[in-house]
Image 1 (cartoon, rainbow, N blue to C red):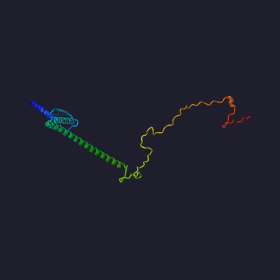
Image 2 (image 1 turned 90 degrees about the vertical axis):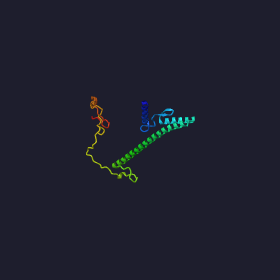
Image 3 (image 1 turned 180 degrees about the horizontal axis):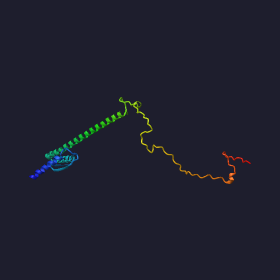
Image 4 (image 1 turned 60 degrees about the vertical axis):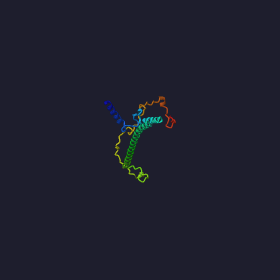
Amino acid sequence: MKSSRSRSRSKNNRNRNSGGGGGNVVNRVFDSSGPEGKVRGTPQQIIDKYNQLARDAQLAGDRVATENFQQHAEHYLRMLSEAQREIDARREEQDRQNRERQAERDRERAARQEQEGSPRQEHDGTAADPAQAPQPDVVEADGDSGLVETPESQPKPKPKSTRSRSRKPKAEPAPEQADAPQPDADGSAPEAAE
């Protein structure tokens, strides 16, 4: 007698834990104890199985078994539809929250644009004239712009020539050429003095 009570308690606990509420009922696997034995599967699989058993019982002419299988199928159909309603309600709530967050972001963006003084459009819908917008003051710098100097901003040094600085001395003319008259700048030879 003791063992039947403990079995009964554990069966009740199992049913309570696997019943509706909490978790994803749509994909959960259930063990259903029907008149023909256990039926295992997701709610949709159990519904299909009980509907098939009900059709078989109806063809056999057993109205009681047909009704019994239909009631079992209806139980899982209710569980499934309740779970689907909860999923839909959660989805609608998330959509509503997302819309509220987006509206809040849009309001914040509009407020920032107003504070920055960069109006995109006038209130009557016409485009704002940039000349009418407030202009920033020009500040003269005392040579120190406050910017950090980078290698790109420094003046570039002149490249050093690759030629050698040492030059060869000019060759002195040979003695016979020393007495010869040198051509003038225009290329003509000067007349020799006698």
